[in-house]
Amino acid sequence: MPPSRMCVPKKSRIGFANRFTTAVLVLVLFVERRRASSLMSNSVDDWVSGSAVICNGIPGLTKEQRDLCYISPDVTVAALKGLQMAIAECQHQFTWHRWNCSSLTASSRTQKSSVLLQRGYRETAFAYAISAAGVAHSIARACSMGRLISCGCDPSSYTGRTPTKARSTHWKWGGCSHNLEYGMEFSRQFLDSREKAGDIQSTVNLHNNQAGRLALANNMQIRCKCHGMSGSCELKTCWKVAPDFRQVGKTLKDRFRGAILVAQSNLGNVTPLTRIRGSRRRRPERRQKKYRPGRDNNAGSKKKKSQGLAKQLFYYQKSPNFCERDPYQDIPGTAGRRCNRTSPGGDGCASLCCGRGYNVVRQRRIERCRCKFHWCCVVQCQNCTVEEWITVCK
Ligand SMILES: *[C@@H]1O[C@H](CO)[C@@H](O)[C@H](O)[C@H]1NC(C)=O
Ligand SMILES: *[C@@H]1O[C@H](CO)[C@@H](O)[C@H](O)[C@H]1NC(C)=O
Ligand SMILES: *[C@@H]1O[C@H](CO)[C@@H](O)[C@H](O)[C@H]1NC(C)=O
Image 1 (cartoon, rainbow, N blue to C red):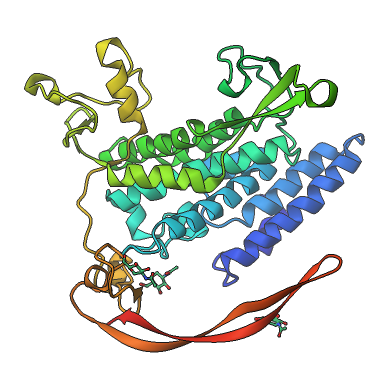
Image 2: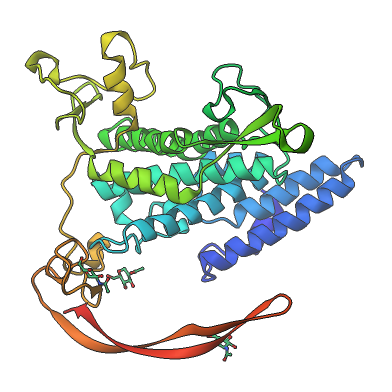
């Protein structure tokens, strides 16, 4: 056991964010030091003890995750940043839902302490998918920015398809592509390793992890740069970039709406119960198509359909209504939530307040205003107090 472990009290009260920041700081210092000392013979020892300091400071890792962290502490920290980004995006996408993702934090995501993560709701599916995508996204970018020791720009030359943007000109792959492959693989190793039970919960979680990563992979973008005399664009070089994470969030939000209810057969397979969008005919003898994550589901004539299935989110439990506070279920309820009196949708008081009605309250907030541009180059604003009537759920 490395001696540094003793420095971390088992039930430390320091918040995750603090410990996380410390881990990042330690890592930055440590990586720099390792770069400086990489020519010296003791760098391996440094690496091992530095990893232990970082990895033992991260709460809630499983043994597999901790082992992975010892080998690649810098990638693990990028993975945790990806989880934080994923949760922030989840909160953005669900701002106007009764369940608004506020009960998830990056530490609950590694510790599975949130009850919701141990259920089979649509919301659970979304949380798993966006986390897996966030981890892959964060690492893919960090690789190409040269922040990680074990990976760099995507080395593959994509011999396959010509990017649409590059058609009709001479072009080649060049520049620095975000390393999607590496990010996807680490996301698999880091998150999928938690799901070994083989029951419906882990089977569905594995599926949703992969669906999240696909939402990232299918949204990769191509950037090109022109070469040639004064912008003549005789030749282009193109590279791949991960999309803005908002795009991934939007895609997964669509998948959330169309999530597929599944049930488990006694063989451990998962069977869709709802009709799959885009399938025109429904043949009874084929309806019970088995879907097995990780196997080749693209064989034969059902290729299109099962490719569609891989992208979809799976759930196996009906969601509660998330209306009333229930600490045992990790549900904060919607009392006190701001709502829109006139909206007929999910953000409307009728839906958000679950029929309890709403209060009209005067709210004061401070806004930036009367901004002025000063030469050169600062924008100075004043703080204005805005008072308005808002409606909040009873
Ligand atoms: C989410 O809901 C909780 C409780 O219902 C509330 O305290 C919190 O402010 C909400 N978060 C956002 C971002 O609206
Ligand atoms: C409330 O909802 C209505 C109808 O959807 C919309 O026109 C209005 O802009 C919304 N108000 C706020 C404050 O979001
Ligand atoms: C406006 O408020 C922010 C914090 O809310 C403060 O840092 C800033 O100094 C204020 N600016 C002015 C011009 O008062």
